[in-house]
View (cartoon, rainbow, N blue to C red):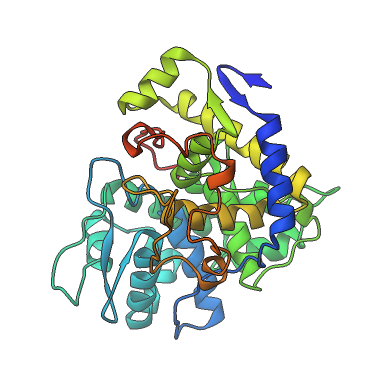
Length: 340
């Protein structure tokens, strides 16, 4: 269908889904860092860190990175592992009382690269701190000390059920989790809590797929989603910053495409997301693509490396842009946002 100048290519989605169905995709799993926190503290940490995990590799700016135990980590990996180390040293940073008064300087301090003795290059620490303060104040208003209490109140339901307010509805009260029409952070947090074995959902079929800039880049290159609005396509190609409505149009189409791929593959959206996200950030990168030869990257899980039997990107035979020079391959749309 065409949705305001963005096309979901049903045929490509079907073919890709059928390919994935026959691939024997390994079970999705989170690449959990070694953690000495209690499971209770870890659940609260995930709630906090997902809320501020956005634009960690902004176009034209340095990506968030740092050394953890002698290894270079970046993006989500560095963000969550740094927060774990900080929480081990000071568990108070996981409480509403601390969150209520979080400042930009706290974000920078938490993400300081202690091994290289250099400051954090995290973007917009003031905006991220504001999201944390919102969480702290709203939890205090609700009389809640831990995010588990929302799960208990919802009784394991994602959507509203009879007189029970669902977990999605409860968490959307938070600015970090409620203002995105495509629900990237909310969906990812719910997936993370489920896949880590912390929360079980009675209506798990309602769990969708989070869409971030890695998957935007991948689907535009695959051709499962096409921008048919010439003005919007020109803005994306030129790297012009999109407005919120334009960004949502593209991400909504990709969200729809993932469900169409689910229909053909019988692989649930959260599991497709995990595969797409890992492959796009490693093999279909902004600065490098592995169309003809797939190089190993430290962030690509071993279970996916095992699928690369011919040493080229697994999507090569199903990609609309495989024959294009790297400079002409679509890149993710540029947006200044705290939604993903």
